[in-house]
Length: 201
Image (tube, rainbow, N blue to C red; front, top):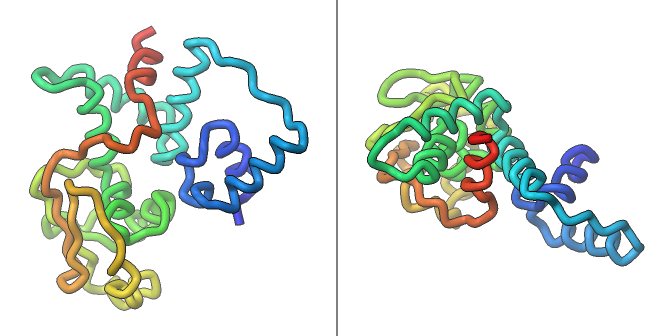
C-alpha cells in the first residue's frame, strides 16, 4: 500500500518517482479521481517545470537539495563530456542506486538502508555510506556475514528474471556485482536539462 505522502507526490510528479506507484492499481486510482472531477492542474511556467524536474530527481534518488546541487556543480566542472551525461552518471554511480539497479533491493530507499547497515563490500572494503561514489571496474560484493540475513534469502530465485541495466551486472552465484560501463539515460522519466537550467539561474 502506498502511504498518503507518497501517493500525493506520485500524483504531482508522476509514477516514476516511486516504484510502488508504477502499478496498474495506482493508474486506476488516479484515473478514477480524474473522472470524479478532480481539478486539472494549471499549465506550468518554465520555472515551474524546472522545479518539478528537480523534485523528481530528489524523490526518485532519495537525495537532499544540497546533494543534488553538489552533483550539478561537479558535473558542470567536468570537461570533455556532456554535463547532462555526467550528472546522470553522478546519480547512478551512488552505491545505494547500484544495489537497487542490481536487483538486490525493491527500492532505492531499501537499498539505502542495506548499505547503511554494512551489508556490502566495495573493492574489499566495507562501505556504509549510501552516497559512496562508484567507478568503472568497481566490484561490489555482499558481505560474508550478511549472506545469512533474511533480505538475501533465496536471492538467486528472487532475481532470476530481473534484467539489470547494461552498465552493471550481478552474479547471484558469487554474490558479486561489477560496474561494466558508464550508465546511459534511456528512461526518459526525468529531464536533466531542465534541472541544469534551474541551477544556472
